[in-house]
Image 1: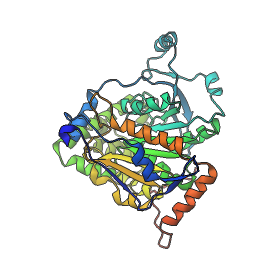
Image 2: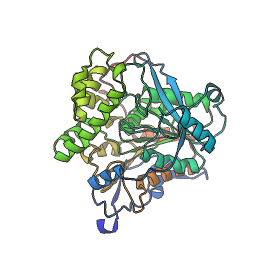
Image 3: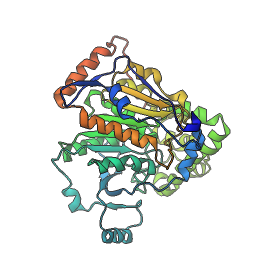
Length: 433
């Protein structure tokens, strides 16, 4: 089938997934919505395995031009103070405005400018426009091609969108000696709260990519039935970071190409923020600059700055495999079985079978955030936009209907009996927000 570009698509879900009320007063299931909206996976036969698909991201075209306005937000969290940035999608400015912005500030990613105080003061709206909240991958940002390829068709269809940048990413500054980590859900939580205040009538949806998918899955699990997202998609989630780490270090390509590249990207991030980060007394600048692989960076930077004894302890606590069991909103995950980074052995197939709110879509071919088709488009971008559009256009998730879905799901999930299993219990103890 590779000769013809046909990838096999498999769906894994609860034997009785939740039923969703439609706007035509009928009902459909989450699995049906996913299978009817997601197109067949036809890929470029010349990129016939996960490595070739993943490598092609290096030479791929620049992608659709998305323009942003950036807002710097001060964190309200007691142990994670400082600032983070959110980039809001805006209409393309006039050429004169673009030229003026480029001359004024070249410290931002392309097509990005800051909100002025007056602009931010007037950003609020009572409209009911659907809004997509995006989380990028490791050391990425709102400028990433894979993210823009999902955002572009949604914006063209009338949606609003924003991207929560990881601290230090997308040329943002940090003001405290800590970067993001794979379970730093606090900035997402604060952003969602702000969006609810600024746009009280907008239904919110979410999409996360790679490490951003891991963070988003943990956030949705932590929120449980309080989560305000109407639906969410996790793309190329690594799920179990320790399993992925072990898999990467077992092969030459995994260690010398993928782990080394990601480690190099994180080292560059450190060097960009070296002055601020080295204010943290637990960090050794010389040791950090010698890091070659991702696990080395996590060992000497992420683990100590967050209070973990080893990078393995950090990986196990940050993993989102168990969070799947705590999700209480319609949730779709998309993974490729030949993904060399977010490996198949880390995908929580059995957990998806336990939660009627979740559906897992896997393809036997596609790589990491790749799934390149003939012509250069990425299949996952079409799949995500089609699923979210169908959810918004056809499903009625008003407050009363959400309660009905919740009641139905509660009847399908195992009743809690002692001993109680808490899928979102952190090993890293933090004060309440």
